[in-house]
Amino acid sequence: MPVRTELCRFEAADGEALHGLLLRPENGQESDLAIIQIHGVGGSFYRGIGSVVTEMLAERGWHAMPMNTRGHDWITRGRDPQAFIGSTYENFEDCLPDIDGALAFLGSRGYRRFILYGQSLGAVKVVFYQGMQQRREVVGVIATSPPRQFYAARATRTYIGKYGRNEQSDVRKQAAKFTVPLLTTAGGKESDFFHLHARELAEAAGPELGTWHIVEGANHQ
Image (tube, rainbow, N blue to C red):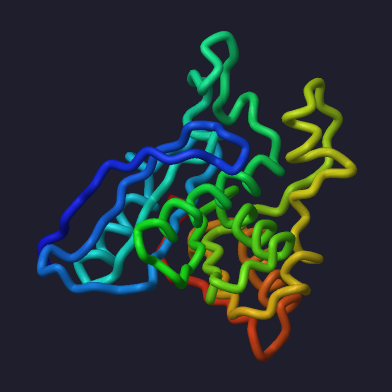
């Protein structure tokens, strides 16, 4: 099915400028459900596995928007011309206002239900987001290849926030708060710790809500 694309600009809840690409079926098939895709470390909506998957979903009749968080790419400019954003400068908890902004933007376009889909660090972010925010309009979460984050002494707040002893990226406790379905996946060619974490998160959500699956032959990307 042919796909219509629309480059979108919107604001995070704290005012940071963000972008995404809204994909819809060319036949005009309407829906009140949209899938929001969150990229991994240094990624973006315009490259990587997420952009490929969302295009495939749109070809099958889904409405989907891969989006940039403020952690897109490694270093880039944000709304403040004197400051940088990007993965190098991002705090993990920045995903909260970023995804809030995407939900508000798509809500203004008539969408009322959402599935959050994240890959790699984006998978950790979507579990963290829904566990923290408990948004009623989020009806499901998909976490693909969520990495386990281990503590290591780092020099900056960015690395401490993502990987430090008191990091917020151990989201098993957030998955345990879920009231919506959670699907976690990992590639068969990925290392065992990806398989382990996919299982841990699904088990934390509980047998009624959590499901995990290993995709044979797939790698991290």
